[in-house]
Image (tube, rainbow, N blue to C red; front, side, top):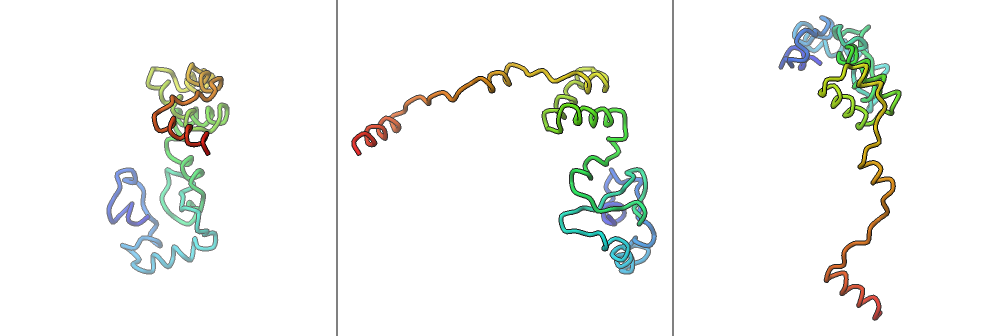
Length: 154
């Protein structure tokens, strides 16, 4: 958190600050101890630190411990019109990679966010082939033929 905002500033965190109590540039080692005192009660090994409002700074009333999925859905993008419609599409059509790709591909083709989200997914030719196809027998190779002969002998 301090590293991202102050020590080696990340461009995505340009306007994000760490409160003075937690800031190691201001409070030194005491900043880390203050952070542990404020946040350690809810800490679990599999959770990550997340800001409740992605537009606010790091401080005790704006931070929580959450899983990766919650953290990924709590970004500035999801507060934009595109992000809200993508979230809507994921709840309507399924929270899959395909839904996300379909939405972004439609946006690139000129759809509005609402059109991209509301248009139902088209099953497409590949999906139909996948559903109806049965496993095709593999083309016999020399090695397969040899093993077939050996199996028949044994």
